[in-house]
Length: 497
Image 1: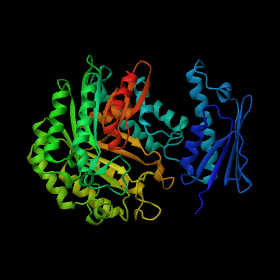
Image 2: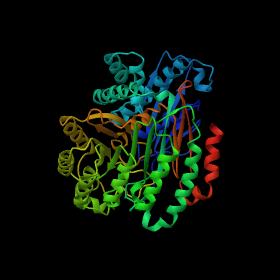
Image 3: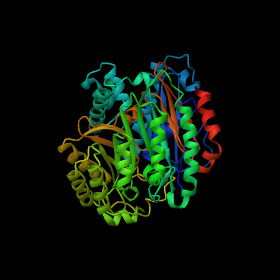
Image 4: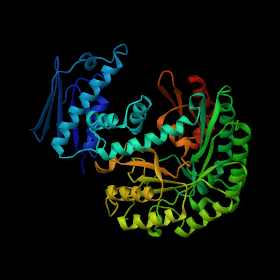
C-alpha cells in the first residue's frame, strides 16, 4: 500500500524539524516533507506564512481547506529567516513555543485529537520540569507552564513533576558536576527479541567474535580510564544486549578488567544487566556479587509463556523465578525487572497477572515499557498487536506499583516509532522503592554529566555544565567494524577532549 504524504510549505529558518516532529505525532504513519514550496501532489498540505507580526496556517486535505489558524502580535520575526546565535535566547524560545502552539491547535482541530504531552516532542520532558524546580519555581507555577505554555495534559504534568522531584533529591546527594560515568556495551544476546532495535547479535552464532570483541573493548577501556584523572567516577553500567550472554570465563575476564582498570574508589553504583533469564547461571550471579556489582536486572518483559515464545525469548516464566531466587541467594539486594505493556495478543488481564506475579517477588526496581516498535525491529505492529489498550495497561501498572510503595523516578518518551498516534506518545517509566533508585538512569536521562561509552553501538555524551551543551560521539554498530576500527573509535573521543 502506498504511503500517504504530508507536505509542509514554509520558509525554513531553523523550525522545520519542530514542524515535522509535531506533525508526525498527529500523523505517525505519513511521510512528511518540509519545503519552501510544495509543488508535487500530497495527501495533506500545510501552508505556514510569516508576516510582519503574525503567523498564518492553512491545512488542505484533498484540495479542501479544512483548517485556518492565525497568531497575531508575533515578535522576533528575524528568527524565521535566519538562526542567529547573537539573538536573545529567551525570545527565540518564546517564538518557537508560539510557532508550535499554532501547529498544535490546527492539527488538533483537524484530527479531533489532543496529545497527552501537548507540543512537547522530545524524549525527555522531565528536563523542562527539573529546570523549573532548580530555578525555584513552585509546583503550581510549573503546572501552569506545562499546561498553558506546552499544552500538556494535567496527568502528564503530574507525572513529570513527581519524577523530577525524585530526580532533584537524587542529584542533590551526589557531586555529579565534578564526576563522570562509564557505560560498557556488550552486544550479544541469547536470541534477538522481535521488538528489539538495539545493536545486539545472537551469542551462539557470533561467539567466535566474543573474545576478539573483548580485546578491542579492553583497549578502549584503557584509554577511557585516562580521560578524567581529576574527576570522580560516579557510576559504571554494563548493558547491551545481554552482558550475561557471555560465557562464565568471558564474564569474569570482563568484570576483572573493569574493576582493575577503572577507579572504583568513589563509585556510587555498579550495574550489570543480567537481563535474560536464559543467560543466567548460579556461577555468573556469584561472579557479579564477588566483583562488587550493586545492581542487576532480571527482565521478564511478561509472565505469560505464550507471549515469551511469540516474541522470541527462549525461556519460561519458571526460569524467571529460578533466576530471581538464585540472585537473592547470592545476596543481590537491588534487582530491577523490566516489563513491556502492549505485547502481541496480550490483554489487560494478562498485564494484571504479570504485575501481580512481579510485585509478589518484591524487586527493588520495576521499569515499565510501552511497546512501540522501532523501524529496526522485526516485529510489525500492523500485522500483530496487543489485544488491549496500551494506555489502560500502563495506567494499571502505575496504580499497582504506587499502591505497593514504588515511585516513578525516571522517564523517557518514545522516538522514531511506528504505529498509531497514541503509541507514538507513550513513555517508559522506571519505578523504585525509596532509596533504591538507579542513579545512572537519572544521570543519562537528564544529561547532567559526561558519560563515556565503550563498545559497539554505544554513544558517548560529553556534557558541558557551564555551556549547557551536549556533544555526542558514536561508536560503530557492527561488531567486526568495531574490532577492526577500534583505534578510530578512540580517536573520535580524543578529538572532542
